[in-house]
Amino acid sequence: MTAESSSGAASPESPGRSNFIRDIIIEDIKAGRNNGRVQTRFPPEPNGYLHIGHAKAICLGFGLAEEFGGKCNLRFDDTNPSKEETEYVDSIMEDVRWLGFKWDGLFYASDYFAQLYEWAVQLIKAGKAYVCDLSADEVRRYRGTLTEPGKESPYRNRTLDENLDLFELMKKGEFPDGARTLRAKIDMASPNLNLRDPVMYRILHTEHHRTGNEWCIYPMYDYAHGQSDSIENVTHSICTLEFENNRPLYNWFIENLGIFPSRQFEFDRLNLTYTLLSKRKLLTLVEQGHVSGWNDPRMPTLSGLRRRGYTPEAIRNFGESLSVSKTNSTVQLSALEHFVREDLNKRAARVMAVLRPLKVIIDNYSDDLVEEMEAVNNPEDAGMGTRTVPFSKVLYIEQDDFKEDPPKGYFRLSPGREVRLRYGYLITCTNVVKNSRGDIVELHCTYDPATRGGTTPDGRKVKSTIHWVSATHALDCEVRLYDNLFVKENPSEVEEGQDFTANLNSNSLEILSGCKIEPSLQSAAPGALYQFERLGYFCADPDSGSESLVFNRTIGLRDTWSKIEKREKK
Image 1 (cartoon, rainbow, N blue to C red):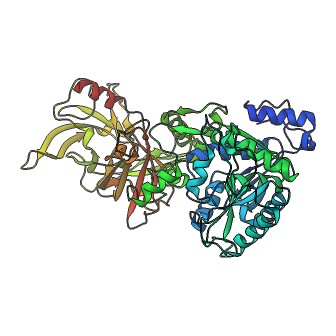
Image 2: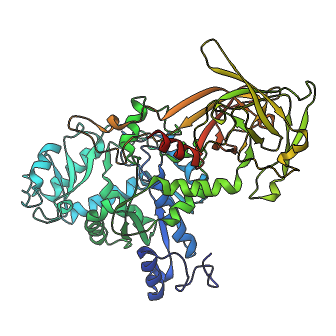
Image 3: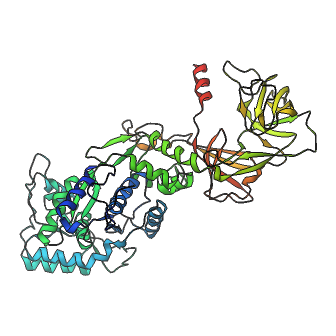
């Protein structure tokens, strides 16, 4: 928690996690800039679903506003109607709420279309904007390169009246798409290519998701963004590093319009191993059917992570752990997974489930006896209490928990070996039953009645404890095992002639049917979080219902045996 002043804002001496933007805000408050007011905003374009990279920006923008007693707006930069949809608007609002943040104002760049148009007219009248007839390709050719200056458009010196008339005709829809643009008149020799007469408006006869067909000219992002910040009196406009070279243009529009001087600050964007954080490429995965949709649990979208079982607390803790700097770097996916495990360990209820069942018959257990074994719901939280799980003559255990010919270092069940059943008894395997193909289909065991609860009154040592479910009482379910969507740490690295989809992991999803879970999960609500003991963390999928239970693996547990097994095979 940060120290707070009497006004409710954090004082400049607050001991919050340091980053250079936070330091700037502290200095602004000390200097009395904007009367000590802090106003930030999160401005997504509604052309896709938010992903884990956006979570860093959300946590930073909303977090700084909260720390310093300021405000943070949610604003949709909806200036490109050909790619934007109400579906994306709704999903973005849902994701921000899910992360635990509340916006102080909800705005759209389209709210400001009339004002932006009037400001464009103001720049034309000041001789600082003109209507250009060059095509998009011609504009690019005229712009020049990083080492060569650009060439002025032949339409750059149109008269003021001609520019005003043409811009009005553009607004009225008199010209087809791409026929003309409105460009700022700055400097075609500027070393910053963004200042070489950038396009401010283009013609686009496309229906807008909010304004319908009211407009057929739309402002470019670089023109609309800074002015939208200014209208909202944003004091600290925070964006990622790819917009650093756009800042001089951001400032140029504000200065030449003489409006509230919002200031832009850039920080490093989040990059994760085995993950793509490009909405364009994520859209390709959806459109080409590589995933089931934006909320596929393999996707790095917030809706996908939510469906997989990631918690907002884990994502916020991960976001707060990240540096805020001026240097882009790549974070290991395992860092995010650490915060997910840490959070789920505290909140997920423990249950027993068997994903690949192997039947076990306890020969010396009464046929009609059913005992209720007391089980702890979460050893990290005593307040979650206990539950009972039924124990009977016929059980299911994991296939991997039995080996007929156990290798060195394997201490689970095998012929003649005794193991402990979690919350149950000690059992010893006495016989193995196989089918005609030689597959093991059934084990026969005996149990020691004196070891209820796993105790050993005589003090004998048992090296392994395994989980189980009662065959009579178990519920059937489907379990979806998810792995990384890509096989390479950097999915964008491809051979010549390939695209990023060449790095897709063909084994990123394994669906197991006929899994067995304890009966306490009969009413598991979609989104409910569990630790399947010894297997990992799982989440009830939205497809799940009382008649058909479906669980997604959120993340696995650390499995020391699997590492030993891999080493033994080498």
